[in-house]
Image 1 (cartoon, one colour):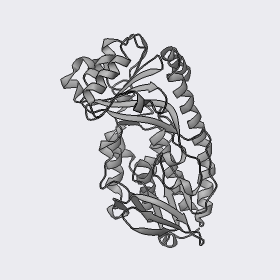
Image 2 (image 1 turned 120 degrees about the vertical axis):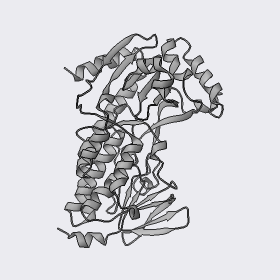
Image 3 (image 1 turned 90 degrees about the vertical axis):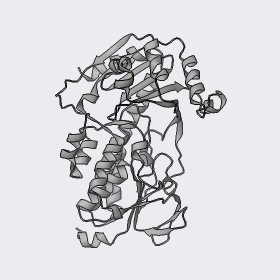
Image 4 (image 1 turned 45 degrees about the vertical axis):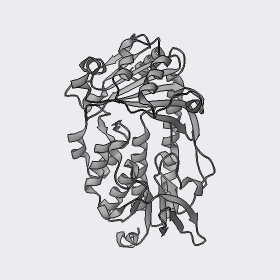
Length: 386
């Protein structure tokens, strides 16, 4: 085994300070191995991105334990966030799952910002460089990788890990395959301070998630830890639909009115998710890499998280896979003398579990935006409990 002292002299560069990149750096740090995270934002913006995350017992929670943060995580996690209600467009209910108040389920919720704060609380701040947007990377003849950042900084690293999301600037070193539009476009909305301002909707939504699915459309809602209900109005449409629909998110009131017209025959209770939303509307296209995507092995470059296997959110696996990847790669680096051996060990394992989850995610996406989606999803989820 290579000593920790030797490994400290390896220059390990992690591109991206999301949950995956932070988990990787923290687990390495716990084993005495230094790395540097290069993050494009000027400061941590995790509180501004995404909503509440399910952290799974067999992946994300294992990584949190390996990072030494499980007790702190349990104090923050919301186990009641596993409540789930499923409707069709008329408001007919197909599932109504309630988690007991004191239950310790397998998929507790935590807001993305809180999770990143937790990881950052134990990570040496000197290991993160903000305002470093990777422009491109070059593999050198000596096996090292040269990183060129938009601020003019150039760095050379022994090991580069792309934790930089769906549109990774590291992935082109390994493959010419790019992400594909998954056929789904969403509008992200927020109903702020829902319990106080809109008690009727708060009572309907309860403590977890609501899915309303019909006509190749959906309203997906989730209570966050800060009291907001995050809402995704979701449509199965062509990739260029946003440009051709005439809906401008720069005019939120008009955009919300257009959404209501698209869902004109949906129940009034479901319309409230749009009526009550704050006047900020964010468009989201959903992208994916091919199920089973693999790349040409590079002995000093690899990928984790969405950079490696971006998929739709319909298996709840995104952050969990990113953190599992981070754990598996970090422990492989700890175990092995040779970085290339660590990469091979990690990638061989990751390809298996990530392709399984990508298949489930794709199948669920197709189901949720098919005809009779609500009863089909209810039947599928009921089969999991049998």
